[in-house]
Image 1 (spheres, one colour):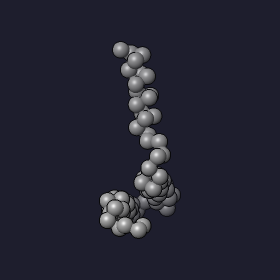
Image 2: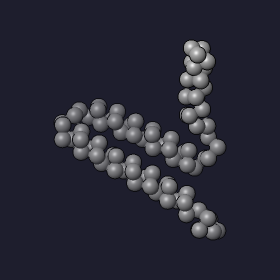
Image 3: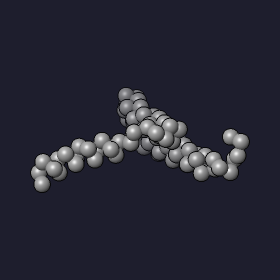
Length: 84
């Protein structure tokens, strides 16, 4: 990073994503604890959260990864062509 000004937007986006996922994790933890959920539920919820965070991080880090939007458009585009 020779020029900090050029990367400011990307750094802010990554920081925002990390803060947002942290807030979601705290909310989920408090929600599960308040309702007395089983440890297995904690594992499931935080595993999904970790997968989502990892996917978002990888999309931010490697800009050329395929977007899931293309898959969704392909599936529903095919359905639309079949029925219309």
